[in-house]
Amino acid sequence: MPKNKKIRFTVTRPQKPDRKALDDNLKQYSKSYNFSGKLEAQLPIDISKAQELVIGLDFGTAFTKIVIGSEVDAEALSFGKYGYLLPSQFYSDNGGNCSLYENGPNCFKDLKLPVLTRSASLFDQVAIVCFLALVFKECRVWQKKSIYRSIDIDWLINSGLPTESYDEKVVVSLYRKVINAAWICSFQNKINIRGCNQAIKNIEAKDFNYIGDYRLHSDCLNLFPEFAAQIVGYVQSPSRRGFSHLLVDIGAGTIDVAMFIVSSTGGEWLFEITGKDIQTLGGDILAKHRMHHSKAVIDIREDFPTDVNFAQLLGVPLNTLKLIDKPFISAVNSSLNKVVNSVALGHRFGEDITTFICGGGSKIKLYTDQVEALKTKFPLQIIPLIKPDRLRNLDIHRDSYHRLSVAYGLSYDPLNIGKVTRKSVSLKQVINKRSQNKQAEIDRNREEMYK
Image (cartoon, rainbow, N blue to C red; front, side, top):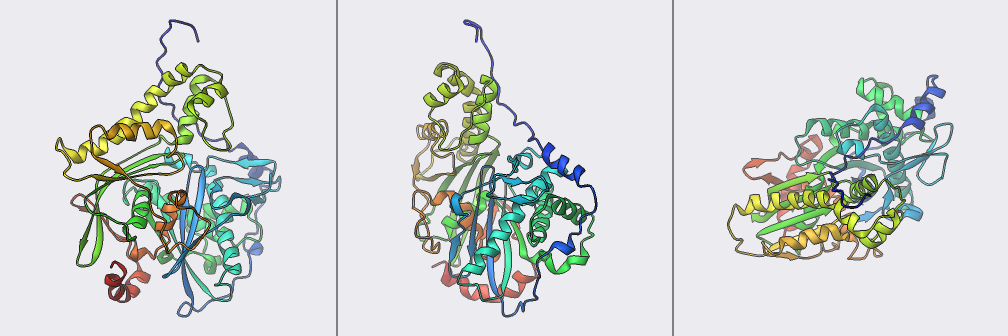
């Protein structure tokens, strides 16, 4: 970089991921794919006697987390060598067969990024279906080894949405489509790109009646904004507090900022969202921003490097890295202040704001510095999210539970996730036939559950 020359950096917009290998595979094997002939045998179950299990799906930019819940407890799914944090990527061989673990010649990453940038192509959707199909197959493998192995299971899926509300129709429609297709594809004996491509096209054309027994009934799929799911785990816990709360969830793709108030009405805990902002400014985006402006590429496999180490890896002076970071810091600061200032409206808070900093990027100094800066203007009390007793994994440390908190919140029965309002506008809870049938039972149990 020439001396004495001012360079103005801007926040880098993430580039679309390369899906050429997927396109090549579909072109190479262009003949029709006998989908129905490659499915596992599916035995009918008696719904009235089946055990209901909820798959809490937190499909993340860098990692995907699953917590499977019943009415009384929940368990985080471990993915072998990856543990509870499954990299959001998959491999395929030259025949299009997919795997989470094998290092095939093709590796597909950045699966969620096109969703966040609202630019998901058909190939991006096929890649998501392949990955989620592999995840759902793992859930059924877990069941066969669990205490539920000899019981018929009635599966429900609660998925987080990377949105500010329930009403972003494009994202909601996309999630419903890819999750339904992935559930069907998870019954393939071997998850295959061609099968997933056929599934997503036929789902869109509403032409999948011939394998109706494998479809996920509309009552069994519910979608909730990720920030609401993360709050639910806290609201359902004995450590909940009153007054204002601030949640800052720093993921790989986004920074999600929410202010909310917890209250109790007639024995039911409610939370009102008083301020909300979500921006594509997560840890992976920060890394891509730094690499783009330094014109260097590095591979971050483990913990996010310190600023000094990051500058060394990029081959730039630390001062240059700080200049590159300036617009990014400004954008993060703007998101945080936008939410808190909109709630404060120029007035002082009468009580401390209970504050949670969560997500994979919660240890990155750039973000923690901006949250700490808020403390000079607002009375923040930063506390950790407490690991709930309902989560029975003994090896999940209390300091790492926050990475699983979204999936955990989603592992509740959808009717028990609670009531969310935003200011005076109610965010309507998902009501379906299954929920209506259980309403009387839930009403009887609700007061006891919230004590």
